[in-house]
Length: 372
Image (cartoon, rainbow, N blue to C red):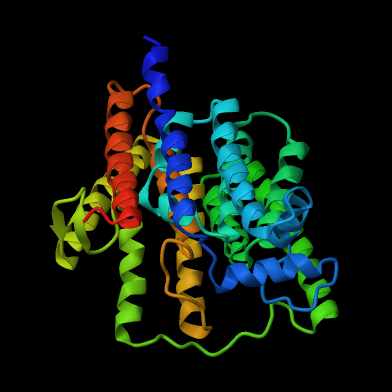
């Protein structure tokens, strides 16, 4: 039976995410070296003299700053808008909204949220990308040109927000092979069109970069791993980001629990086994196969190409920030794996949501107000 009172509990996710932002911003501004570059980039627009970072996030900062005239305020307003839009999209389309509300309460998103980073904009873009592809893959009959065009547009916007989104574009090709193998030739043709059109548009953007700045994607330095620990940490975060509740070693979790690295590995591995079991079970049963494979193709292709990029180019440690598309699409495949009308599903989701919020919000409170 439909229960509006139960549904209201899911709104704890946006509420506590907002509260966590206010708590953290009350203590400091979360601005990294990259953040300062974004502010400088936005200030100089429409002049583009450096293509190290894409243009879309600075454009949004510049537009928002027309209202606030302060980039520290502008990035925070943009952050609240982006996450608010993320929750609004799934609720408006009734698109697995309880599951995505739960997903956005996970540790990785609580960690990303306060920072002045372009990843903030990627969250609603990914969600809209999910909605459009779900509609395209579940539609019957004639080719829906509007969905194809919107798909191409979203891929372009993602690429001019984060260059690593090109890896998501690349993931369409293995998915096309899957569709051909499954004899879904019409859908495969749609995605070939999407891939080719998206590739052409992204290449045109990179050519404009080359024309304006002399480089396609800025000057890239040789890799510098910062020692074996950073390499191990990068590889470990691949596993840790699939844990909704905490990453790595934890001191005073909930105020009194201590976890060493070994415990974090064990818990994350056990959770990964559960996630893979649920995905495999759904693939065997044939439930939402195309959408699950679409998400897995996006997740694993992105992961593989990101690791290659890490080994060949100087980028930061592969943490919750740089691995955002990997775990977002992986968890999305899990969302599509579990049947919507599974008995007690709301109860399980609420338990996960409550535990995630309790752990993440309490950790933020204690870290920022030094209760320990």
